[in-house]
Length: 229
Ligand SMILES: Nc1ncnc2c1ncn2[C@@H]1O[C@H](COP(=O)(O)OP(=O)(O)OP(=O)(O)O)[C@@H](O)[C@H]1O
Ligand SMILES: [Mg+2]
Image (tube, rainbow, N blue to C red; front, side):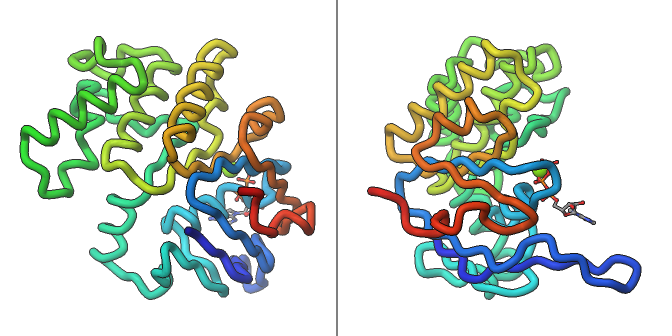
């Protein structure tokens, strides 16, 4: 489904080049659930942002279902990102004053779905995260765990092929963390491909495949090998 070939990322700081990612290879098969661990500054978010097309590599190739992502630009790239990828961040990234329903609807507003279809999808997504009863609530009234459930509902509203989660439980208590991990598990059981970044070994262990980054490269050279089916 996804292939990263020799992905490198460099930043230029005060005239000198700083390597962030070095020759990263990764093959992701449909239906996988991958966790990425690694120390702070090892490049986890940078790699996630490249997978999410929010950042571009300095060199290397990113193939998604045969599409060469580096050739996509502008509205084509935005459309790809909106329809085929879902994002969950540590800080939720919800709009506080909007209702739960309206937050979840946001990615649908860039599609041509009818009002009826939109309502159906919002209902289904909120049901999947157990938050249907909060639909009319302003998002700012919710707890952290509830906000993250809403963020997941928003991330899956367009039924993306790939779900990317960067420290999704980083701000949550143990109970909410378990809830969120259970939702990811259920999504993966129903076929959703998931890549999750975490500092938390316990969280990482819930994935089917664990990878570790160290100084912008895989800590385990076997990491880039295709996962067990
Ligand atoms: N915009 C930027 N400008 C300068 N340096 C950056 C920028 N973005 C990232 N870096 C550097 O790149 C390296 C990797 O950052 P990245 O955010 O990917 O790490 P991370 O593994 O996600 O860390 P954390 O666990 O703290 O979230 C770090 O050394 C960071 O300082
Ligand atoms: Mg990070």
